[in-house]
Length: 427
Ligand code: PLP
Image 1 (cartoon, rainbow, N blue to C red):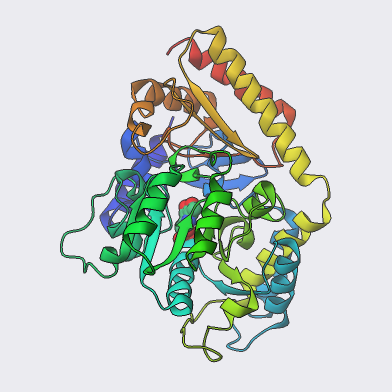
Image 2 (cartoon, protein in one colour):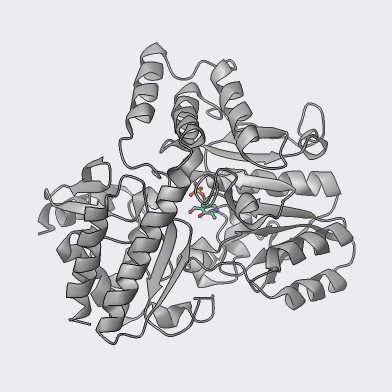
C-alpha cells in the first residue's frame, strides 16, 4: 500500500543526498521508507498512494491547530500576491514581535531567523558576547539543531539522530561545550565548580522532547536558574518544540521558571520557516548595531513567513480555551492508550507533557539518553508498522514525541485508541 511512496523515495535518493528532508534517518530504526505526502488537511495526511493517515508527526510539531489551517493559509496567500521578500522592514515583523513579547514572560525584544537551528546558534553567540565567556553546558540527548557546534558536541547518538560526529569537520567550539546529564543537578554543579567563571550559559530543552518527551524533574529548572544566577551565567531555554505549544508562554509559563534567552521555532512560523530568539533589553542590546554581536539573514523576517506566524500566534492568543482543549484531548489519548496496552499485558511507558506524548516499550518511567535504546526495540517497530497499516502515523522512533493538534476530534482519538488496541494484540 506504499508502492508509489517507495518509488518516489528511490527516485529522490538519486538526487537528494543524505535522505529526503523528512524523518528518513529516524525511519532507519524501524525500516521501510517514509511516506510521500500528497496533501494534508486538519488532523489528516494523504500520501501519494492515497492512504489517509491520522498524523501525529505533525511536521515535527509546527501545525498545532492542524494542517492547512485556514487563517494561516489566507494570510500567506494574501501576502504572496503582494510580493514576499521586500528587502525592507515590514510592519508585519513588528506586529508579530509585539504579540510574541506579550505572550511570553520576561522578554523585551525578539529577533526572527529562519529555523530553530539558527535560533539556538544565535542564542549561543549572544550569550558568549554578553558574558564574554566561551563555555556552554548542554545536556546529552537534548537537540538544538544541526549546526556544527551542537552536532559535534552532542555526545549522544540520539541528539544527532544516530549519525556519528563527522570526521574532518572542524572542531569549532566543541571543546567549549560541556556535556551534562539531563535532570542531574549535581552533575551541573560539578561542571560549574570545575570551570569557575568560564561558563557563558546553560542551554536546555525544558521538556526533553527529543529523547521521548522527558519532563524536567521537580525543581530541576529552578535549580538551574539559581546556579546560573550564582555564577553570572545565562539560562537559555530552547523552546523550539515547547514554545507556544505547552502554553502561550511555553515552558517558562508552565513551570514558572524564567530563562534569560528563549529560542523558538516550529509553532511560531505556522508551518513556514521561522525561528526566533528573545531576551530582555539588557541582553538583546548586545546585538549589532547597538552592541558587538552580529546576526543577519537574507530571508529573516520575510513577509510571507511573518504573515503565517502572525496568523498562528493571533489565533493562539485569542482562543482562550485552546491550551485547555489540547490538554484534555492529549490526556484522553494517553489514558486510552494506557488502558488498551495494559489490557494486553504489555510492558510500556507513556510520557506526557501538555500536548506532547511518547510511548516506549520498557518499564522505565522516562527515556533518557542511556536507556532510550532499550525502548527503541522490536516491539516498537511492530507497533509503528502496525499503526501505519491501521492509518495512524506516529514518529518512527520511541524517543520521538507525538504532537497532538487541536484539529483532532474525539472520533480521531477513539480511532487511534482502537488501532492501538488492535496492534497491541500482535505485540
Ligand atoms: N531545538 C529543538 C528543541 C528542536 O526540537 C529542533 C528541531 O527539531 C531544533 C532545535 C532545530 O530546529 P530546526 O529543525 O527548525 O532547525
